[in-house]
Structures are given as C-alpha cells and as structure tokens.
Length: 120
Image 1: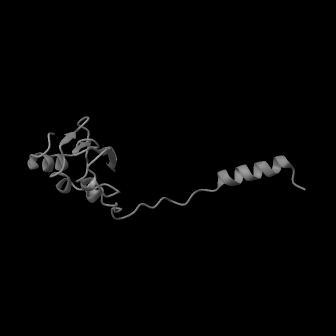
Image 2: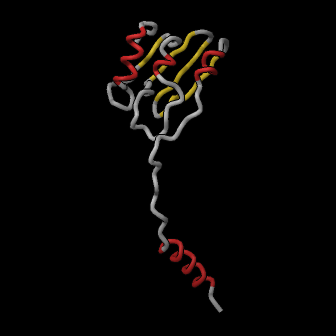
Image 3: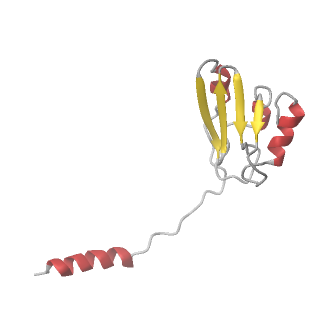
C-alpha cells in the first residue's frame, strides 16, 4: 500500500518531471474582427476599443481620439482590427505617449498626418 507521502511525492515529481510540448507559433498573422463600422456607428455616449498592443480608440459623442496607435505594422502576430487609412477620415486627435516603436508607429502616423483631419 502507498503512503500518503509517497502518493504526494509521486504526484508532485510526476508533474514536475514531465515537460510541456514545444510552443508552436502561427506562421501567418492572426486576423482580427474589424471595428470600423462599429466606431462609425457610435454617435453618443462613451465607447472604447482596443486596437492591439498599447493602442486604444476612445469616442465620446462624435469626437474620436486614438492613443498609441500601431495599426500599420505587418510584423504583429495579431492583425489590428482597423487600419490607419480606415481610421484617418474619422480620427479627430491622435496621442503618442512616447517615441518607442510599440507606442509610435511611423507608417501609422504618416497616414494620419497626411490625411490632415486629425491633430497628431
């Protein structure tokens, strides 16, 4: 008969001794649900959408604000739910908290600035 101590040791060491299978990452970008229609349809109250990593869209009434938008970066594992080109006509203000690549994305910012609709 196995003692309680032996049973616990067996269970503990059995779990520790086994290794997990190797993590496999997707080869292609994982698609995201598109949010442009939802953003455009919202015209009252306060709404918030996550655009991936550190980025957020905040809409209050008809004012749309983006923070740390990195939506035109092909190397991301998860595709962004919106592109800068889709966003540019509707975005009123774009904030960049600081100049690191995960908060400031040159291609995204270029599209937004060239649209001349938003304050960046």
